[in-house]
Length: 338
Image (cartoon, rainbow, N blue to C red; front, side, top):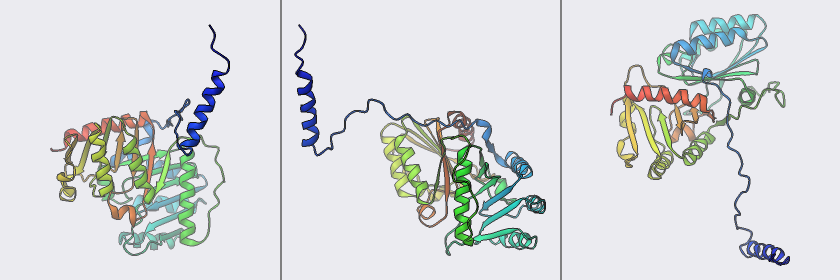
């Protein structure tokens, strides 16, 4: 026997009444959940340690045809200085922003200004550091750095990530904002870009911490972190909460910063901590989530960094690149002490 035709309108009215009575707060299940974004960033876009990072930096600078934008915490590498001068004299538009509190930047600023190169100190307040570190070539390729452009900075065990999709154009827009904030003169950046959308999220300052919190909360299996120190209490709590939900949390911290991140801050048995040898120093600032996405930030995870400093991060939902970082993490895990 077929069901009466009027049963469906009655069911609809009942459901509609429930929504009204709940003050429109009733959450109905999503029939078509929003797909999780996946980036096509390849593993080859990751450059680890001095030789790979340095050689790729030189190649990118030499390949520039229209513009070179640099924002760095510290910069005094002689070869890179001379290469920048040569490209400027060849007609390339060069703009450089440096942190004003690093003494080694003074000689670089004076030298490049004497060559009529547009170089400025980022106008941070006293006590605030500019840790943003990237190179932008022709507004279409960006290299995001862990290390500074100094001999000492490039000696650290660190990472650089090359972006060639729409995220590179977004990085150019962020540089333009910093340049305008410094000089009051905006740069000419197109309102849109023909570059493919690589699904990479860029964040600055307090939004870096928000990205970290969101990624920790969204993880379902594992969180692997390699960073000199973690002292921000909100992030520590977020990691403890994730561990209590069964996530595998592994931390590699710098041996030299051991006292800054006491083990008793991480009481969960699902959190394991190891310390990377002091030589070479650990420069990594990465978190790998479920071995399928990663976040790469400009500095350590302290409250001061998020509140006071000018910071930068990228969140990359790339399984291929994350797998390469995961292999690197496993190697560093074996080198580290319990």
